[in-house]
Length: 359
Image (cartoon, rainbow, N blue to C red; front, side, top):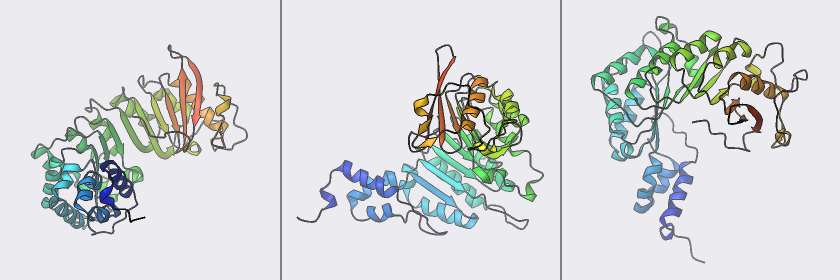
């Protein structure tokens, strides 16, 4: 049997090979080539493979590091016209730790970033994280050049990068950049509350469906969310810090009249009141809500009564909820009558069900 020649394979098979190669882990060091990845190496074997791989090769681009490294990356991207033609997801993550002697961002960097963004006509997901003391420089430039990104649907922002909402008029999903969102710098002490600044900007996001936060959750925090986006349909409350008890938080959650999807943190961080919240607690009561007994064990995992208690409490307060996530793996789908009355809960765990977040 002769050797297999990749050129003999049809277009669809080669496209699947490129997709597979594009999923292989790639961790370039600072200053490394923009696309020195397994897929890039494969794409250089023939012109046909290069053409097929372009859309996969450039669909996700990351720029990180400091000002100098960011300029180098943007310069490299400017030399490859295919980047702006194919990129769907762009991560500009310069949220590095600064000190009082840190130089402000060069004007060249801000200009290069706005130029690239304006040329990326297929861009749908933007991650923007910049040291908080210098976000105003980027915001002012974007406003001066009238930068608008109408195709952005998902926006992930760092602290004080809420100005990005003004250039993404059709954004549907807004998230913060995880643990880095709560990291405080002593030189930012004079800046306004980062969560409230983001929520104020979100008031004008007319097509917003999903909001993902990373906060210390008290009733006041949820009141701010309710005031800013009362019609939100999907809400994720991460952050490992639920300072107030769940019954108190639910007094606010119950007033989100369109809320269909709710993602909570791990059960160990949620205070139920007098009930233990760590999975495995033996004194947690059996849930009053009806649970499909055939689904009490899914994937050889028993559903802890604490999970059931959380879902019971939330379901009673939030009448429109369809899905509740607890932590990174547990998902409860709420089944109701057409008049909204509760019927049952179907439980799923990671590995047994599609865990992709709504929307």
